[in-house]
Image (cartoon, rainbow, N blue to C red):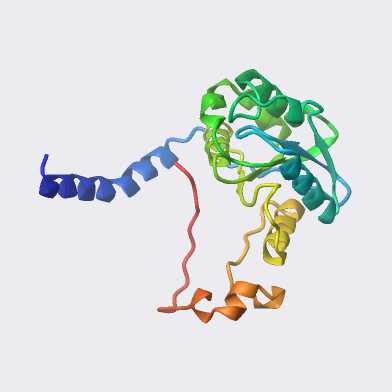
Length: 223
């Protein structure tokens, strides 16, 4: 295949993509379900379904949970179950997800880090359990695979946001608190001047700008 033919095929695939996405969305057998909100003082389950966890990452995740005003819980074997680049065997990580979802003390799930590993186990998760408990699941990077699998199999909305070991600035902190307080509430994406975001204040080119005024509404969905 020469370069011209390759470009033509890529353009055709790009043109078909929105149509294919719409078909998949229309064929979903599950109604959209929002998870339950949580309150200050509730317990957040810290899980590692992907890459291995160091002491530093775990301590940073715990500090972030406490700073937000919540309690934390994690597997007692979390730091001892490293399997190469993974946070334990496939069975270890499956069990951790199920245990935290099923634990009545745990109100929400926050993934400590991404990395790699979820695609090895998402076909072995108990989606009936996940749907029944309706807990917030928060994270990004490799955690996106979990978000997609949960939504496709249950209709439960998950949240693409900072992992628990991230450096949480004021803007991210406010967004996370909004999710925990009301998972159904839509958030506006704005220049976070009121939160004194250092990057947007220091470098004007990093500010979001209106090129042409309009009002639109859409759903973000991963496929």
